[in-house]
Image 1 (cartoon, rainbow, N blue to C red):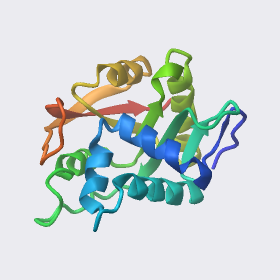
Image 2 (image 1 turned 120 degrees about the vertical axis):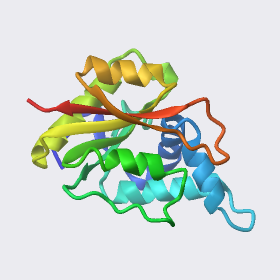
Image 3 (image 1 turned 180 degrees about the vertical axis):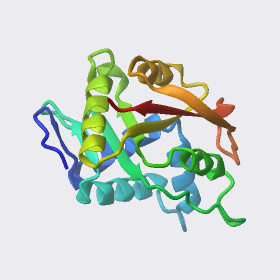
Length: 193
């Protein structure tokens, strides 16, 4: 991992509640929909989300912005390898178009979650986290960045396009019970200088 200077830091398991909230916010309710599907015998879906985020935090895979009052924004990403992930008949339909697009973004560093609480927007936090993502990508030898956004998320698209990400592909959004206005998933790529 690259060196981080305050107010940036690696997330810890103590950030799990905020991280689950941010992930769900960025994912426009899709994470909660998925967690609900995983819940058993009255289990709280948020408990599943918090546990998943705590695990990622323990693995050192999440960067947060924290000026002293807890995480107000987060970045989660990972390197996509050179080989596509097989998509067989058992692959969940809701996630199929997302995996198809990831398979079109081979050998990139993928911005999986970039989220900021609304009251902290307009302060350059998203841009700062994208800069961190690019530093991580370079440190891991990735020549390009990638991200997938929902077609109705104009704010996210503007942010990425201001940072030279270019739409390269899209897929129909399979809703499968998820309440969303999104019609398409959009893949944006950026070549690193």
